[in-house]
Amino acid sequence: MAISEQIKAQFVEFITLQAFDDQYIDCQEEKRILEVGLKNGISVEESLALIQEVALQRGWVLEREADDRAKYLLEKAAANDGKVDKKEFEDAVALFEKVSKGKLPQPEIKKRLKQIMVENGFKAKEGGLFGSKWYSAI
Image (cartoon, rainbow, N blue to C red; front, side, top):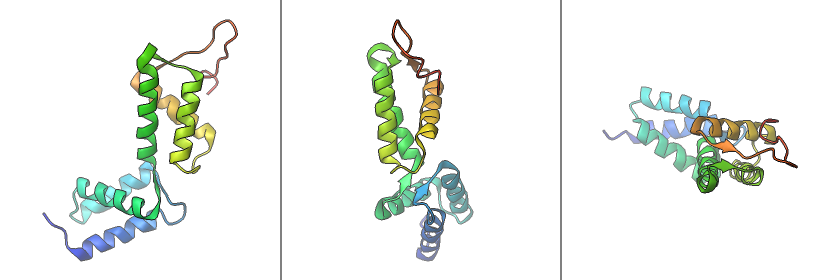
């Protein structure tokens, strides 16, 4: 079902309002936007496409995209030996920080990436004779 141009324009303005203050759309804001879209007869797929389009046009950050990119990097790191070492984890943190344009503090990013590792069953390589407990410290 095609949506009217007026509804689409109002929805784009609503998206703009949600990210107006910080140019960052976190998962809660994205969910709220999707709910408003559904109430206005816009499908989830159409709403997601509009969110991405507006974010791309304005250079805004979507938290979900930063999560997805970091998760991909962690998957690649765990693929070779089944574990993520400290350098690989720090690389994922740096990527997330870059993609999110520094909108989240580094401790929050590390907690988020640790949660991604837990949810996906990725193990951390830490300890050893001279190793640190970098993962446990997060």
